[in-house]
Image 1 (cartoon, rainbow, N blue to C red):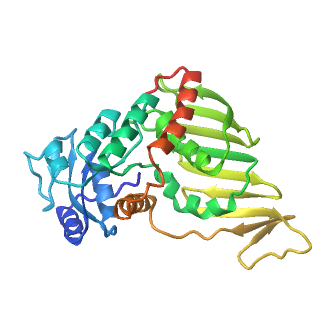
Image 2: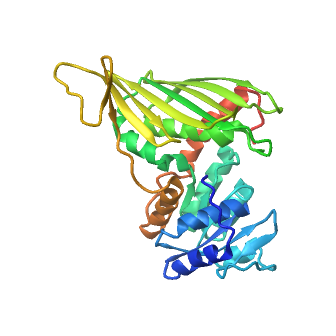
Image 3: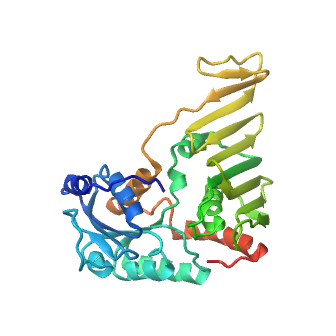
Length: 335
C-alpha cells in the first residue's frame, strides 16, 4: 500500500466533495492512515462516491464532511453504502462474509488466510448475493509489472527479490505480507500446474520467519525462485524473467524495466538502448496511474460493467494454496 499524509480535514473534505456525482457509494473499514491513503486515490475514480471510513482500532470515523462522528460505527457505515473497501483487521473471512451477506460489493486486503472450505462457502455466497468481490493483489496493477507483462511469453526461469526495511510493529508474517503477492504475480504469468515447492526460512528477531526463500517448479519446466524478507536497510522489489535468447528485468519499486538481448549483425542498438559488450538493453516504457488507483478503478469497472473481477476469490485461492504448502513445509501457523 502507498501511504499519503492527509491529516488536514480540508483535504479529506475536498475529496468527498469531488465525488458527489459518483455512482457507487463506498465506505472504507480499517486503519485510519491507510484509509486516508485510499481516499486520496479515490478522488480520480469517477464511478465512486466516498461516503466515509471507520477505524475500529481507534473507534473513530469520518463522514462526508470530514468531521469525526463519535456514534458512527462499522454497521452504520455498511448500511449506508453499496461497496466496502475492507482493510486489516477487518478483512478476515468472517468480516468479508458479513459484507457479502449484506449484499455489498467488496474490495479487500488478502492478509488473512482463507481455508478452501471458507473460500468455497464465500464464492457460493457471492453468487447468491450477486455482488463483486475482489482481493486487492495491488502488485498486479504495479506500473512496471503491467509494462513488462506483454514481454513475458514463455519464461524458463523467474527470479524475485523482495525486501523491506525492518519494522518491529509489523505483525503480519513475511509469507502473507510479501511473498504472497510475489507468488501471485508469477502464477498470473505461468500457465502451468505446479510440480513441486521447496522453502527455507530464517528468524532473526521473532518466532516467525524474517526471511523466506522459496523455489517453485512447474510442469512446463519453468522454475521460479523467491527471496522475501524484511530485515533490509533499504527496500527492493526486483524480478527477472529469463526466456530463450533474452531476459526481462523489472524494478517494481524504482519504476525501471528493460529487455536484455544478444546483439546480432542484423540488429541495431536503438536510440534509447544501451550496450554492454554483446548485450543490448532496450528500455520498456512505463506509464499510467498508481497501483492502488488502478486496483480500485478495476473494482469499480467490474461493478458498473457487471463483469468478473480480474482478480477474484478463486484466483486468490490458487495463490493461498501455494502459501499454505510453504507454511506447512516451514511449520508455520496458517494465519
